[in-house]
Length: 508
View: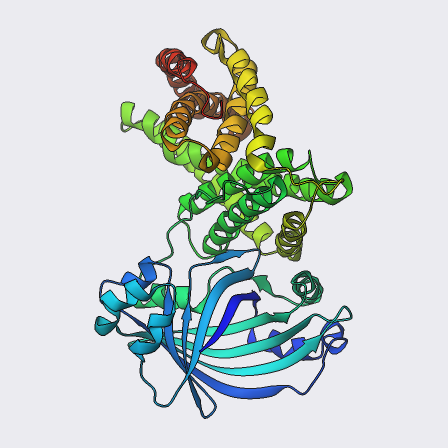
């Protein structure tokens, strides 16, 4: 048995023409350490009819590479900023079929003992792989793989054109540096989906689900730097997964979840700025702000067009002026959505993802100035206390405040919620869940009030001035509906604030 304790590779997607240009790129030429070899690689992936292996995050395949057969099992790992990390077990095979006996040597022996007899082929990948050994100046060794081919599931197939940088030994930071050089000069994008994930999606004939925020499992004694890096990687995964899907889909939930990931990362950076050097973190914060300048308006118009105006129209059915207003809003929404898509496809955005990944990789390896280990559990307590006090102060009489003050209360609640969600795995689960639930209801009410205020502003943007009496009447109707919606929401806010005030902080 050959065990690669942790497979680390960085993936990019590009056209076949771009892959040809990668070979001649100066950054690749500078680190080549042997001839490039091309092999036909055919991999068949196995699972049960109910997909129990995929549900557990396990990939089982049998691969033919040249005249060799290999059986591989990959465990559930992480993928962020194009870098994929996971455990891998691999064995040579005498014949092209799954050897169940070998699976007993993996950490998933119980899973395989229960399901492997029912495993059948689900999909296959067939690629021509050109592999180039690389050696960097610091001794880091890696392999550049250029894959061109297809993923097949039954009669369905999709193309594969990938650039993989697979670490053999040394510092994974070199992979980010090389990928950044390639993206700067060539039309390549960071890839979050593995071939296995794409194959399962093809076999299921289902688009990828919008990726929502996921809790990060933190060890009780995890250092603060490492915890921040792990949480940040999850934020990036949420951003890039939804960004990739948004380029090919009109589902507004992708933009919504992309912006949630962006907000969570911004909030995390406020915490990380207490530990990381300003020269490392400030440029990234500026780039994230640049992204938000486009994502924010696009999401605001999504809410306005698909939530607020339909609620108004339901009360004023058949009103021509409302129909015309909705059509005008829809046109502006499409323009903003196109602008967001254009941003996600830019070289600048791809470089930002790689820069974020490189920063978090470095952050995770950091230590305090005196070499002492600062545990995340101890470090975050006073920060949660401070944010909690701010929320209590700003929401004490939130139902009496004007919109700008309520907005500041909402921001404070959001920042506390994200920090609480980030670090709650380090504390009591029940108390943390109760606290976050009450805080979420408070933030949700403040958010709905903010949506009403934003809708009023967007009306002015859509129709800044008009002599069109019909549109003017429509705006009057909407403003009246917005005003009437505030009072009941303020009542819900008051109740949400009361329930939150009863919660005991879970970190005490």
